[in-house]
Length: 343
Image (cartoon, rainbow, N blue to C red; front, side, top):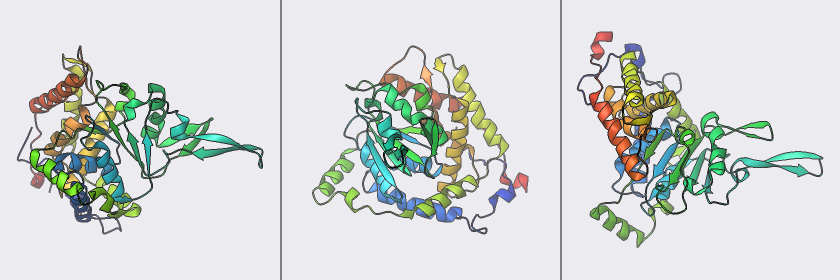
């Protein structure tokens, strides 16, 4: 629910990062704006989806992009990855893909007489998982440990993944031929889910005219280094959240668990990720503190794919779950306050 009043803000939290060598929130916003504008040249007319995707990136979460074929899911994932000068890998999920094709495998070394670990494509800063729900559930589950714990265990040996570690996965609706349902445990590990939808006529015409000359993706160059991305993520963590706003987020999440139409509500992990995403959203909007509007803006993308309705399945259930989250947000009382109250 929208409110014009800010929650109580701790003045100490409003200090400008940067005095101790970290990146300031102004710098974060400026660099983020550059990324948004660059990615928008590749995916025209989808600024909202791009903003949410960048929010997840700076919150160090994982992003799930779900939509019908041909609307630019993979293009968006590749554009985000190209905007960062980091190691990037792409995994094309197919029915015959094996878990070891993702995580890596131990290979016998004749010279040493032992086994040597050969890392799989999951060992990168940005991993693009294309059409993730075309692989079998067993293969999909190979990502579970890496998504949550940012590590991979092979033959009883744990291997840490690079930092930062971000997965951008695309999938088609479950009604499409050759797809498998993404398990609830795996969906819960994605911070947010977005959908692009079809472009409007003007955007589609502009896309057609651009592609006649050169693909914008081919001309996209890295805008931030890996070190800068790490500093941006660290700066986002400094964003202050008042207890009243945290309580507001908790009430929203708990309301999804007791709703009569819900079979499975949002998890405690969802609460944590909602607040991390809200901090990132606040930083992108030039604030050093979170307001209820930030929580509202991210509730749909963060909670919608986690809520499972009773007696519903397919694309209709996904849309209905997002509608239910919007209803819960609208009915949850908003905390009121004035930043001056904390001074």
